[in-house]
Image (cartoon, rainbow, N blue to C red; front, side, top):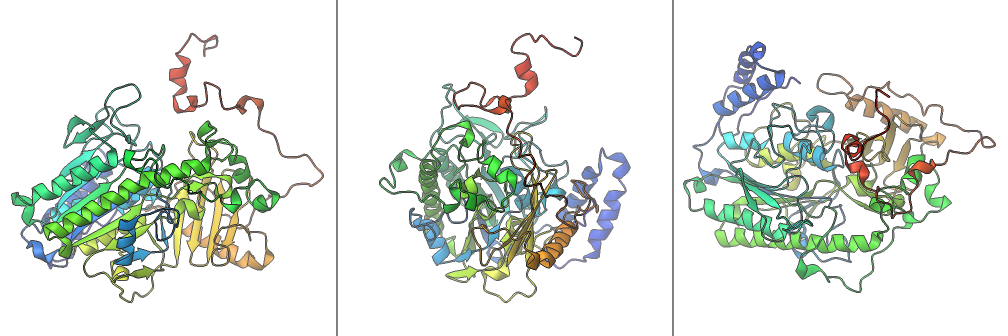
Amino acid sequence: MKMKLTCYTKHNIANKYVSSFIWNCASGFAPFTKCFSSTLRLASMCMLAIFSMATMAKADRMNVIYILTDDQRYDEMGFLNPVISTPNMDKLAQEGVHFANSFVTTSLCSPSRATILTGLYMHNHGVVDNNAAPKEGTVFFPEYMQEAGYETALVGKWHMGEHASANRKLDDPQPGFDHWVSFAGQGEYYPVMKNGKPNKINVNGKQVNQQGYITDELTDYALDWLSNRETTSTGDKPFFLYLSHKAVHANFAPAKRHEKQYEGKKIPVPASQADTEENYKGKPLWVKNQRNSWHGVDFPYHSSLDVQDYKMEYHRALSAVDDSIGRILEWLEESGQADNTIVMLMGDNGFMFGEHGLIDKRNAYEESMRVPLLAYGPGLKVNHRVEQIVANIDIAPTILDIAGIESPDYFEGRSFYPLAKGDAVEEWRDELLYEYYWEFNYPSTPTTFALRTDNYKFVTYHGIWDLEELYNIKDDPREMNNLIHNPDYLGVVAELRERLFKQLSNSSGQLVVPYTERFSSGAVFRNRSGSTSAEFPEEVLRDGVEKDLRYFMMPDKKRAGWKKRKVTLNN
């Protein structure tokens, strides 16, 4: 993946042609590197060193605290949801900026986080699921901040590369961060595992025991780093803190102080949750079929849990995050840093609690791909609601813009800092690409491509025989009326399908999931008097009490070794 890796600052005028020179020099070493990604990193690091700004006065640049929550959907904030109380999130919105149309380009933990850190779509950064690690040579935007004189820290969930290579651990410190506090995989809410062993936290490469409730403990680590750096030689540097919470990822476990919060309140059931002909009219077959699956309301996580009760635990687990934000804001005031620090809050993807009979995420429905995004701090417009479409792909260029660092040309997102300040911005995006690749371990959601505009959402699927979808988002925000076969909208479908296809090629001009561009709905009709759709085979039907309900999480090779098998390749 060839990218022009320029990184220069607004405070340090340098000859921009130098970047091309360095790229050419670094590329000359390609024959001596194991792969082109090594050249990529060499070129990047050369340019970062040349444009270093370590000597710049701290007062010239803004600090940034970026708080990322897990699975927090767009309406999971008190000022949008009357069931819950989030006074500190509400403060961020009321005294700062609320981005009302904020999305992720892939609604899945690892791909979304990779997009945040690289400024690239999934089909370019290559982290296509929760198992794939970033490619060798991948550059994370905090590396640019380090070389521009910032001190950086990650505290919390990293979660990229569940299938770690033999020479690394899941929580190993990663490039771009001077200070590192993390844990393997999803982490745990409480410090002791079911087997009685303590959960571990990696602090700058050293394993220590988790001591308490994870949201509180991560906040303690973050505040300790902020406070301690004030008394060291690095205290003169501006800082970037990436506070990445485990909450509110399933299985939701609230802090003890919130276990009975909201008692007596009822969680509304989405109108589209009911298994009715009206709700599934015009919906793809996979949506109805997923209802009775790991990610559906009839068999959620292969259990009998009540989805609305589950959502109540989700609400309660979020409260510790709101407490954490309050502690961060209090520290900023007490330390005198409030006047030169911007705080941002975002979710890594949305979450469904019964809409269309589904739970969790991955699909392109609004509750899955739409997330909260708030910004608060000096220079931002107060009590400002931004209506333009922004996304996780914009985070890297935005934070670099706040820091006074010009983004490299290869970024696919755009800084929304001017929108947050209330500036007039010409030619802002009018569409956003969404992509999700089918996962073998959660096979009920197909490969999904979508284009979300201000007025419409077009969704197409790859590798299955099913309907496409088109919704008029302005008139049908709950996505109940599929217009895909309405002849009045055929022109809209054709145009959006073409625009979607053009965005799916990677930086080498290739389609990562190769397929021929669709120019129609395809042969989707069936004979009404012919055979009915197939039933699911008996082999996959369960009552919910069987021992094998979670066996799919274990490699077949391991299960095959449990006992001597009668059939092998040789007999």
